[in-house]
Image (cartoon, rainbow, N blue to C red; front, side, top):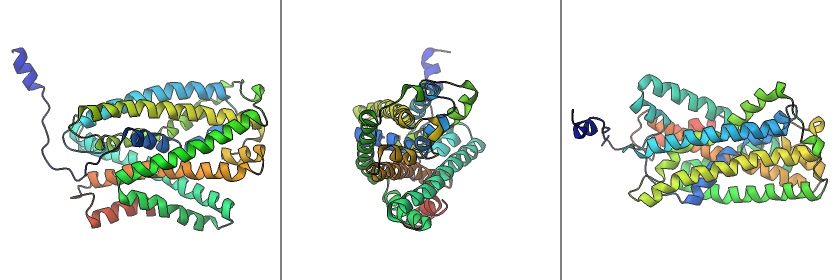
Length: 335
């Protein structure tokens, strides 16, 4: 068989069927913000507590290893998505390249991770708003869902713009807390430079949970599914930069918090002990950071889960009112 015939034989079929998902345009900064905002959520708030027995060097090792492998996987998914003519989510891509059984396994996996994470955000946000404004936690959760559900309803572009603004605010609050930890109580080396490998596996589990942005890659690719080669090349750049920033924050926040608090006094939610160690002024900043972290992560995971529902159940269009009410309702009301 000639080389040309071989080449023709291995050209993938192009799916000309119109997608239910609408293409939009995301900037490089918006994609980076969505990656960072999705990753920095409930996971980072519990990393310091989960690390206190194993030691910060163990955490750093898992961040480097897991972050590298997750980034490579995200790049594979990005290329697959961009090389598929029809806009699909993870479940749709799995159906196309693996089969229907695989697509249901993938969809269930996405649903379990998304609903688990968003339920944590619903509960956590209620507690934070309860602390800040002396509200019942349930009322706090309902208040959280107004911007959380509203942005998801308005779509990917609004999620990108909102994510960029809120992520920048979140990074500013983190910077204030870290700088205050360094120049204020001072970071103690003995609180950081110890290891106990018996507790290494729980830390690994928390780090894996923190890299939630791996689920939103097809959603990000939809924002780059244009005819511009320059725009398409921005997606792998955004993934790499977003994951580098994520890894830095996942290491930095437990470093600063553990460094001034110590393992014995660390709380399950890092911002509680962190604010106590820094003083009363840090209470609002630490809780504000926690609230913004959960909000940005909810937007990324919720937007991706919503479009996975549309894709998996073959809705005619993501902007059909009935389809959108069902999918957004599952995403927001269930948690």
